[in-house]
Image (cartoon, rainbow, N blue to C red; front, side, top):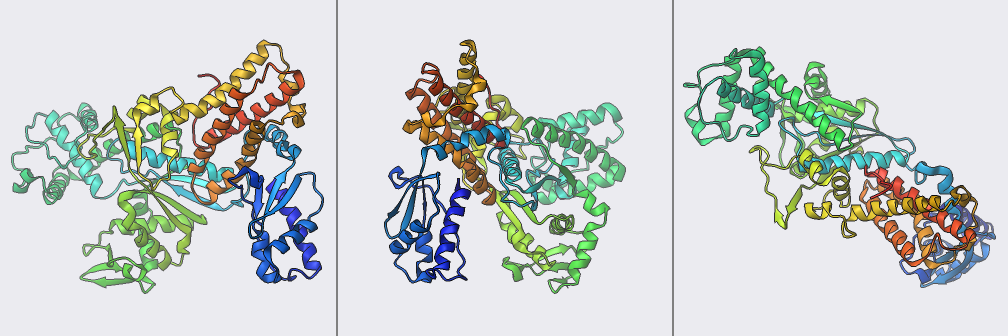
Length: 580
């Protein structure tokens, strides 16, 4: 409908240009908004206000001239001037309900648009260190990233999704050490397990897998293994232990424990995400950056700029030139690349693969890292505005009104798998998606499990199931529902019916907004609004008990609503049940 109105007002402006009222070279931007007050019409535009200065006209007088120049249209019932020069548009009843036939024709594609114009976008999200199972914090990032990808694809973007496996560096050393120490306990060694190693039961399980296959092959006496600092659980002592561990078991032994952990943990992550309806187009290994020479090539390219310099035997990136608080080491004095080096190489490789825009979804603890990476990409000649980071705040769980405490390295956390088992994938994804990612989220587990109208996911899914139930009743009454799509929509004259049709008309606009602003929570707000209008309408009006022509028109309206709810739920990765 907005496209049709845009054409009408464009014609009106062209007429005023021909009459010399508006300068012929004047650029125009025609926007339509939905007034909050229904008495102000179905749509409104500030076109007269935006053109008044160029036309040297009073905005209200220019508004009247625009109205007079509008071509006749069956879509407009009346047009009014309001306030300083707003134009309020009242749509004809027939145009409001045209959406029903459009929804019937397009089905699961209704709502899609082309605002993305095929732009190639890579969304990287979750990318949790494979040092343990995914927890509820990762679940929020997974729900946001996947929903954003679905919405952007629906809006015409060419979207790929990627999981970056952090399988190199210090955390991998600590992971391999943790497994090996549990392995030694299984071999009969006795010692106090370091508190700053990974504590979860999954470490025992991985160690047991190695022990079943290799027996005591990698056993050593631990009597002289731990330093004096070990008792204090310092990070320095932890680094000393990982170094000793590698020298004791050799490179093959180290790789045995690391690979055993990675094989199990990465596969568990894949499985958990698949159960959460999240599947990636690509899994990218950090180790591949070293093996393929991408890091070396990227550092060589950065050396050609003025932003890399040598100091104290190390290579530094001049991060302060891009707003960072201090310059950052890229290659240590011993020749080892830092985490920043691999991140620079990884993101440059994304651009080199032909993506126009990179969207990263990071946890709140990475906020200070944004300018650093953005600066390196700009130094390498990329447009920094094409690197976008969305920060996802952690989710706090409440059960029985009490906060659920969690500690990641300590192994005390609620896993994503446990959350799915407790509340279900639908509720988890819906609750995650209904807030902006940068907002804190209190996740009420009891509410998510409740079958009541206070539970938002239940309320929306029930709206879909309710329509399905009505059609099941129609079938039991031998009503031929195939005829509803040819029904006379002019019979729909109730205010509730117009409100529902107006909401259905908004869906493509909601999708476009959610995609361009990267705010998929708009879909959730929209679904709750449409579901509320559907429930209100159904409770106020008889559908099956009316005469045939009106009944069919109402069934057509309800079926269109069901389709739109199903489309919206699919965009957030939530099922649309036919019965509840």
